[in-house]
Image 1: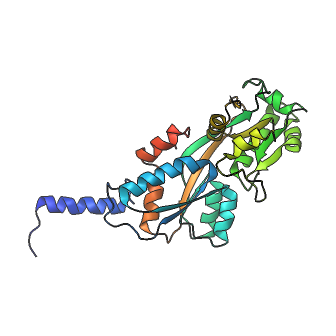
Image 2: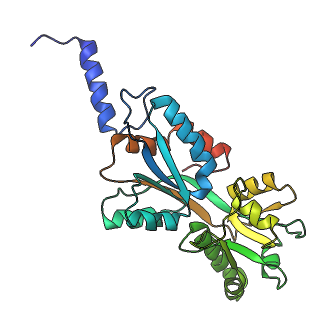
Length: 277
């Protein structure tokens, strides 16, 4: 066997380190793209960010990415019934952890964060300090997404529990009055081209809607008369987004999931209002 030069040995070592690291950073150009697209199922709140991230990934690697969006809980149920997802990016860690616990999926990794905001009609004058009192008013309709089907709804109910610590009895009031307007299997869908939350509020189905801040800002951009109110610290509930990969998925699926934590994808997420992992 011919002696290998120090440069060749170093190159081989670098290649081995890359493989062991599990593709921590995607190469500038993948040597070979899989003919089949990577099947990525993702929370609806990630639609705009993932569309850009997938487009960048395709341009960089040549690997096609097929995106499917929806409420995380409903997506998990579809995956459990046999749909061919290879990457699942949820607006929480519970749903991907549920898949991992059943077997066949990796333990989820947090790749970004979000927060809840109050999206209000122009007729509601609320500040962070007065928001709880506004939510509790008998004449104010409070909209949420659907718990268990959509983590946004679960986070809203976590907020209700926080409210009860501030004002005993608040949980019972909010639990009774909250309108589950989105995220359910039978929730009405907005017309093509309309954002869900902008449409719900434009139709005046609620006076205040509790949703992710990223969703609220996008809705306000679509319907400028809407207002976005930050939650006070005592009511804030952080949203941790987890990603998991099917255990037998091709390397391209793992590469996409790994890329979500890299600077290029993180810059897209943070530009759109998401937080660091």
